Length: 115
Length: 109
Image (spheres, one colour):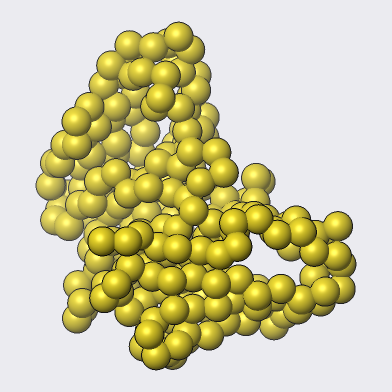
């Protein structure tokens, strides 16, 4: 069974540009969550999508957005990039079967550098 | 919201020593998870706990779900150099998952 796949692995962008990151969850998983990880801040929750709907949102500005497609693949977009957006962006997928809390499995992440 | 306090923040130990780290919360969780992250990689799930009082092992790793549902610990026995990394706890309640800040483990050969 393939794991969570994130593309691209590395990305360098200029301030003011926008970027789109992609995440393909484990087959059968309907929930995709996105996290930002920086050295001093740990894992910061961005948002979660389940069945194409955003279920939860973290405390990030509106420049950060996402969406989920019918095949559960998800994309995350950051507009008007700032230097502080440089981070490892992690995607995690989980089954979310009924009301049972299930494990989340992470991709390898996309390392975004804004210059 | 639910916050997790993970400690210690970092540990420097000698190869062969045992390690213990824990997470506490002011709120209860239904699930406790422990992850390990190597540099430049995503966190990898080590152990999942679903029941208060549950004690689960995965090789040299042992984790427990506290009976109050507000805490969990992870023990690593006989540490080896490849145990180096950042260990995260995560608690989940009604599919709302929170992460601890991580414990950075350094193992000296």
